[in-house]
Image 1 (tube, rainbow, N blue to C red):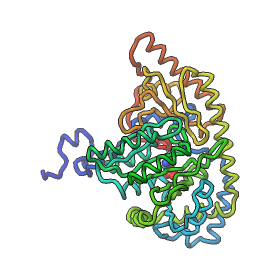
Image 2 (image 1 turned 30 degrees about the vertical axis):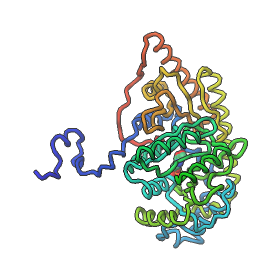
Image 3 (image 1 turned 90 degrees about the vertical axis):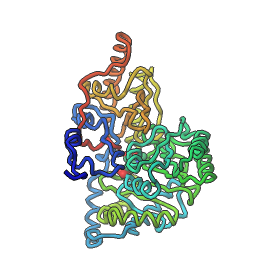
Image 4 (image 1 turned 120 degrees about the vertical axis):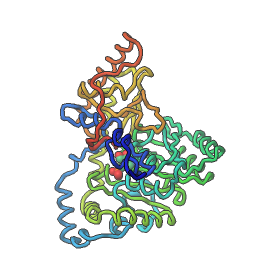
Length: 441
Ligand SMILES: Cc1ncc(COP(=O)(O)O)c(C=O)c1O
């Protein structure tokens, strides 16, 4: 047997004849521990407060059909053809209007690269900057999909403390100093300043200035991820960090939450040199982002009242958020959670004795689901935290879900009081690869 053939041990352990052939970095590609439970959670009788899927039912299908018809009539051959790696200029032109709302002005279409959702942009930027062991600083907790990408490039992820104003600038400075003193290379700060996924927290204007000043001084790039900024409830979030600095910030935007995630269109605004490298990275990975989808979005932005559609989404999410806050106040007053002013999520602190991952099987058997906190940290924290999303279920279902969740939590606490120690409930979580659409967002 040659050295490259799989051994019996490998076969026996993994049932994968290619086990010994994979690149070392694939160790970072791990299946979400809660994927199997999320498949259960997508059953209609389960109230899922878990995923981050937008409420696309609020988008009139007619608007998309009209955009499609115009696209095929006026740009059919181009939409069906390969395009350039930077994305179609017509869409990049329209994106200027979108980002101007959040203070990003003085940008040219040339500064923009369109991508297959902002997840693609996260992958490209990480690919450009990260060698194994390089440090990425991020919020504590942070977006599970970004952490997965960072791990897949073997980054060392360090979570910086945050409070209700966002990242703590002193903790950021300290972390940069300590990593450098230990001989590690800090490559970039990844931040979701607006209605953060998973906490719902928004970074204050003052913090944005301080964070930027530190990163400029220390020559640490900022990767600003902003898919939720336009989905505020009462007041807009402060201007984006990119609005204050064009040279030290790579800005990610997305149509997933303000239009539809199915179109898979996002974009990057980057300083000139980084943008050139990004285009090469797009070409080497997918040749070009989908011209078809980019034209569809361009036509949608050109001829429909997309601002009114964003207002519709905002109204729906604001009502659902209020419903969730009221239900938590009513049913779980002993807990604490964030009170977002936009976006999709709230972050709940549980008593130390509870373990949100262990409790999830019991919750799904009681027909409610949430996302356990551990997925949002790279270092195993988050056991007594959970993310609840209010984006997809109706207000009625939110009330029902929170009521069920309160029963689960109060039941667990009673059991712990009676028997002591952590109690794992319900049927055990089977590992599986069946993919529910929402367990990564
Ligand atoms: C913070 C954040 N960044 C990026 C993404 C990925 O979005 P897209 O659909 O644009 O790839 C998500 C999706 O939920 C997200 O919450």
